[in-house]
Length: 117
Image 1 (cartoon, rainbow, N blue to C red):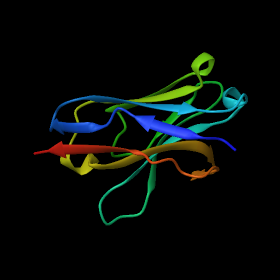
Image 2: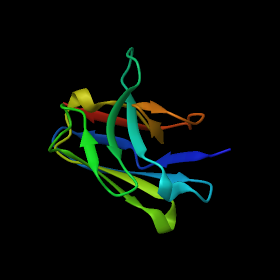
Image 3: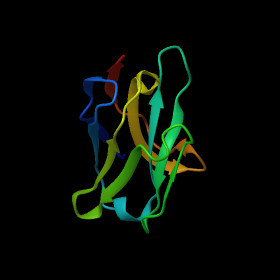
Image 4: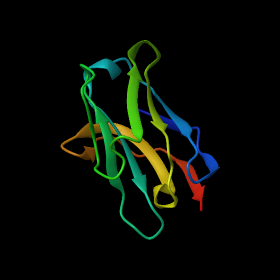
């Protein structure tokens, strides 16, 4: 059973930056595509970024150019650098192993990002 522990969220003003981290248990981290997802208040969870085992990345249109996903396979950790944050980026951010845009494992608690105007 893979466990996912997100951290790094907080309250930030619009235009600011945050770096999220996700620690993943298990010894097969490096062979999976990893994703960051977010759930805004009153909305469904959505995929915002993925990174393949080889390091290729893809982003949801609204975050492209502002967010950067990366991974450290030696540390079983995936990161999300978020720059030029906007109020609409507010939500709970989760990571997961990704398959076709959906999380494979039970969701962690997530980390709350709040962007004030």
